[in-house]
Length: 116
View 1 (cartoon, one colour):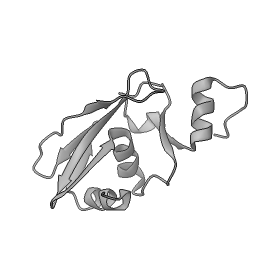
View 2 (spheres, rainbow, N blue to C red):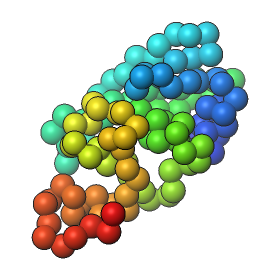
View 3 (cartoon, rainbow, N blue to C red):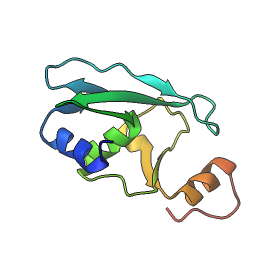
View 4 (tube, rainbow, N blue to C red):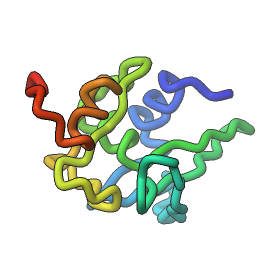
């Protein structure tokens, strides 16, 4: 299994790049996104499969974009929330890293205020 730190290093080294919400290899090839159907998501989050030096990883595009813009790994246990609740809208300003408890509150429209 490839760690999030290794994936971040691939991004930092230019093995994979992000442009306009798309993931590209160092050769400029756009990676195919597939839908990750989750129980709580009606539409699913797009994912890509990364392959480099004999290692493979599958990761949500939103996580890659978050890592690309913050130059850090998504903290363990955290999730990426789409502010407009459209999992295909992976524009940087639409993404926020949240703890799962806060993420559930956002989707449940809970009356308890989320601290951000």
